[in-house]
Length: 169
Image (cartoon, rainbow, N blue to C red):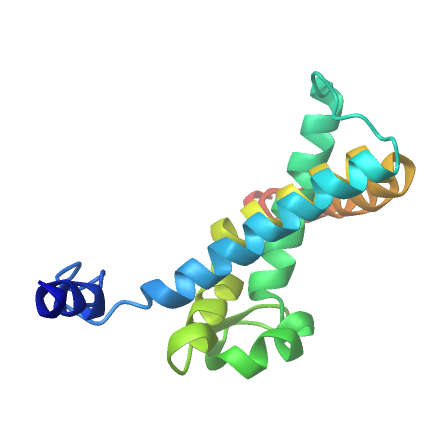
């Protein structure tokens, strides 16, 4: 009986998940870090006496949403933030002085972190979470930072609109 249970316990729980070798242990580690940060946020909000709001106002959702969008684009694609991604990615091409295309490199946790950092949608979840935690813990500072990135978002859209209009003229 002991031999059978030892054999079952030693089998990879992710065996047969996919046709190729997936980094599920690394993804699990990132999920654990994300959950730990959330638990620390809850603990810190309790220790500081900052209550979790019953609801968040629509204007804050719009502000944080625009900020998270812009922050995830800057974090995952801008050339200026490439030194932050370089340890876990490799450059594929430099599309412009502003934008680079990278892919994750390495294996295990290194590759999983690289995947997180080059995916604007994935990174957006983390950044939106941090902004939301910040709204509870330090609302004035969070709104200031979010406003800065929201203003850049509006500016970017105005640049694109101007570019389109001048091409039509």
